[in-house]
Image (cartoon, rainbow, N blue to C red; front, top):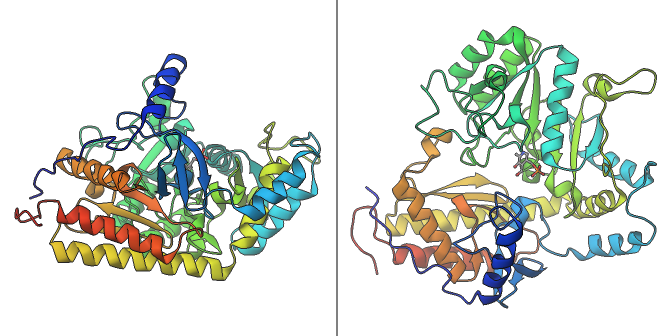
Length: 453
Ligand SMILES: Cc1ncc(COP(=O)(O)O)c(C=O)c1O
């Protein structure tokens, strides 16, 4: 059993300037900030600036950043080649109603690398990318429903949100998971139009997809959902999803908004998935807002409005703005195969070091993740799905204590302990993360109850 872990004092570091800003923020924003995901304990740390792998807060503290704006900044903060290219561009204009060569440059780079993408369209966020991919699947198949993985986060489109915040009190039986709405007032029809699958449950996926087959436009699949546990997919599960989808003319939409960072060709290719559509975002904008929908010519033709009204009219005032396109292209060009290999080697080394520390301390933790992503679970064994990775109140307290320990040691470990590396990090940074984790374990009662010094 996991013994209670005493959280170290929150905000042990100076934060007077952050407190002042938060007081101002609270009077103008409903919860003091403008994103549900901003971390606070209880005050958020306001940032002064970012510098490579580090960021500096308004109180002058320097932190190794394992959040990287929710995995977006694959090169860390202020990646010089992208910033230089954007600086040169700014005076020529930041957005036009006309197309630019910059959007073609980024499109060609992505099409060249990602096997499932023959054609592409740009939007401004991952939420939009997922939304338009789902609309495209609906328009292509003439069906309205979607299937998705329990607990997986895909942004804020109503149907993509269903089941993302399921809890033990709401998620229903293992055989028939419920499409729990994400917010009060969600139209009840949304739940009727979403089929929830459990990650790595091959038999359940076959059964539930087949049962709803004539209504399903697509299966929305993140190959390694971060909120689902950042757990690798079983090959049998992938096969079950793809085979059943193909049997019934259902499209497979891979949400690679986060996991495109897993390899030069993305995560579908890495896990042997051949999706009909891919939603991308985050790293392909080089630190600026971006999203993309890509796929086979046949399916992407739903966006073609050249001769008739497009089946799906996809616009967006800032879509394909040259700033995001240029920053994205320059950042992605720097992500050569060798750069991905180096990031993956750093990730492997870190995961191995964390796992070894857990073994030395017989601690109640386990490590998941791949490539530049890792997650520290307060669990004895590696979970296989969202339900198994869902923390008990005691386990959630252990993770919170760990994040506090890390912040007081100068490392930002995101809530839920799902984190990422950047090319700006060095071997010394990896050693520092492993060292802080080891020291956290040393101050923590072990799983068999003995306090370790
Ligand atoms: C897998 C996945 N899909 C979609 C989104 C939504 O992207 P955005 O925040 O750019 O709207 C996210 C964001 O974290 C994500 O991780």
